[in-house]
Image 1 (cartoon, rainbow, N blue to C red):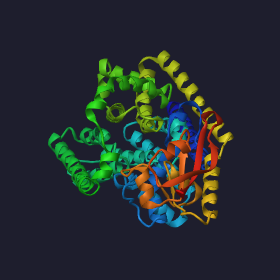
Image 2 (image 1 turned 30 degrees about the vertical axis):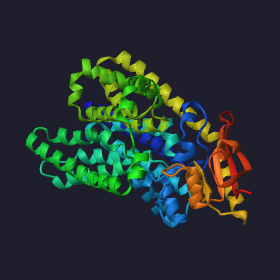
Image 3 (image 1 turned 30 degrees about the horizontal axis):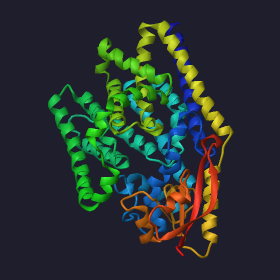
Length: 491
């Protein structure tokens, strides 16, 4: 009789896991639906400027290579020098598809698919199938992750490489120096995807230590090998940047530590509020779990998954607090460790404080539905205003036979990506706009409002700025307008 009960329970758990994973697959598949549509303009997401510029910023090197013949633009905005992995990935896709926002965004979505699989695999190294399945479902349903997974920005690939590194780090055994070296290489790739990687290095190293701490001498040697590989490759990259791209590095990588530390306390307090951007319920639960581990549940510090998630969360929080008040896309990197921390704490509550666990589980279920409601509303009402504006800008430039086809301006590379390819150059970079215009002789200029022709003319240009068209984009409440100007010789 007992064996029958066990079989029934196992069968129920298996079917439940199967249902959860089916929902995960369905939610991940939805990320490709209306992939060209505008980024949502409601809730806190509207605060993020990535929808205007970042896809163009970080695919720019690939676009310039295909359209201008060289990935690097002297005096231009060149983040691809310091974060080359994503433009290389996108460029490889463009080799087969041509310049396509569908291809670029689909690549980002595929990275999040792999991330969910790796998050499941990492959880399974230390927890049950059910734990891993619930974590995967919460990750797939998360609205913040859903929306930013559909942009061709750095975070989806960055998180994927971080998870791959953590997964491999958990498999390093004494004497397995080849795998320790490989962990260092993959972490270097993650850092060359997004330079914030070093803030998460402790979370990468801890699984190696945890697996081998009974043989401390072996553990220290393995850690030394991994860290040595990271320092070797990143040290070489730093040498190249400082000797060949010093001007670019001073613009893109520059920080003023004293000024940033000065205002770090209010940014830290804001972080605890903005952490709810990850999830309004899971983030507070994760925070409570971390506090409980500090003051009472000390045994959690011997839990490899808990400590890894905590180091990831704390490390990236330190980056956000130190760097500046991070926009919503920065918090998408914290979704996975937040879910792990929250579920680990709730797992303990279900064993020791069932009424509290029931209450929190109800709150998580409500939050789950809240996330799905945002996603469903977004997919049910797609808008294509920025795509349409980009196509009209491209048509206006290509049909004009009197001017250079080069378009310059902040967000110009985004227009190029969305329109399927248009020679563009961002106005940011080492070279001032007026000088850049005199050197590269673009025929067209684009700006986001509230810039006006008078404001542009006040810049010392040797050209006339003549407005050609205005395009109202995104949600009407945002009042976002792209203005297209033609650059003509002064009379």
